[in-house]
Image (cartoon, rainbow, N blue to C red):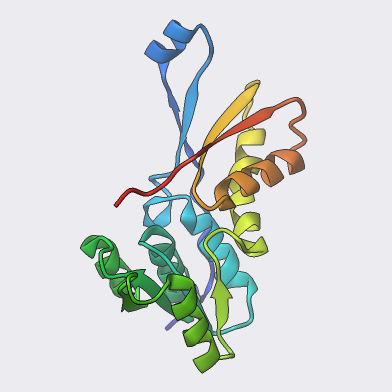
Length: 198
């Protein structure tokens, strides 16, 4: 692998999408920060590349239903590291395939038999030199997601309210940290709990 494959990619700036019809109805300026053009198709790459580039470990273990796993696998490939992603056996086949195509090892589990956390702990005990990355409860993940908050804080427009979905809380925590670092004062962040169904 050449050196260009061992350096982190610069993050792609988030795509700002104006929503004129909804803005007109609500009599407010509304825009969406769209992260689907980020590497691997979601904001999760911000966290993954931050984790993979900052830990000294050559191997990373994580649990994911797909997006975080893809992001970790791609970040590890870029940095010459390896990873194992614990995924439920009912995860999207396309997401499992993407993890493998990016060079990650998929460790498929049946959630009726073992939890993701238990399986990650088993793998970590078998390989104590590996870094265990949580998709949300990890300071490096939050720091990586804070890059989005910092980007939004730097926008040349006034923002009163930001709304974000909350799964595990890594994105919401990062947004708050990034906005705080960008010195956006008086901004309210509304978080809505999001739960995967099925």
